[in-house]
Image (cartoon, rainbow over all chains, first blue to last red; front, side, top):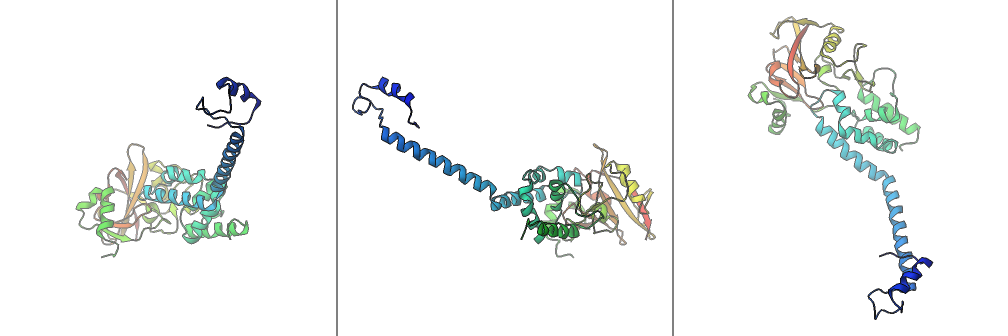
Length: 155
Length: 155
C-alpha cells in the first residue's frame, strides 16, 4: 500500500488507534519515517520505469526487431500474391507503416543490404516516389539509400 | 531438372495450387524473387512489377493510363504492348500465347501465365518461384480463380 506524507492522514491515524505509533493494539503500523522512506522509494521506481520505457520505445534496436517481425509475416502471408493491392493492404504491411518515420532508418538498412519491395513502405511513410521515371526495385532501393545517406538517416 | 524442384518446394506450392499435384510437367524453375510478378513475367519482363498500383509505387509499372483492376483493363494493358485476344490455348508455332485469370467474385484480374515454345506453360507465383505447368488450368483454384481469356502475339 502506498502512502504519502500528508496532513490529511492525521485524522485517519488518530481514528485507527489511540496510540497511532503502537503496533501492539493494531496490525496497522504507522511509522512516519517509514512512510516517507517508502514513498520516496516507490516514486523513484516509477520514474525509473518510465525512463526505461521511454528509452526502450525510442530504441532503434527495438524498432528493428518489430520491423523484422512484420516483414517476415508480410512476406509469408503474401508470398503467392501478385496483387500489389493485396500486398499493401496486408495487416503486417500496415503495421510496418504504423511504425512511422522512426522506422525509416531501419527500413533503409533493410533495403540497403537486401533490395526488395519493402521500399514501398518508404513511398507511403515519406509520401513521395524516389524517381519520376519508372525504375526497377533495385534502382529504387539504391536511390532511397542514397537519399538516406544524404539526409543523415543512415551511416 | 531445376535444383529448386525439391520435395519441400513442390509441397509448399501444391498446398496452394492443388491442381499441380497431378500435373506431370509441374516443375519449380526459378528462385523466389519479388522484383517482378506474373503479369510482367507473362510478357517476358523481369524489370518491374506490372500492376495498376494506386498510388504509384517505386518499381511498379502499368502500360496504360487506366489504373483499374477490372479484368478488361488487363486485356487493354496487354493490347497496348501488341497482344490480341484469341479463342484457344492450343499451341500454335508462330504465336506466343498468354492466359489471363479472373476472380469471378470480384471481377478483378488475379494472374497471367505464358505458353513456352515447348507448348508447356510458365507462371510466376507472386513473390515466390517461377514454375512450369502443363496447361493454364492446373493452377486454377481459390487463389488465382479461373482462366477467363487468352491472348497471343507473333513470336
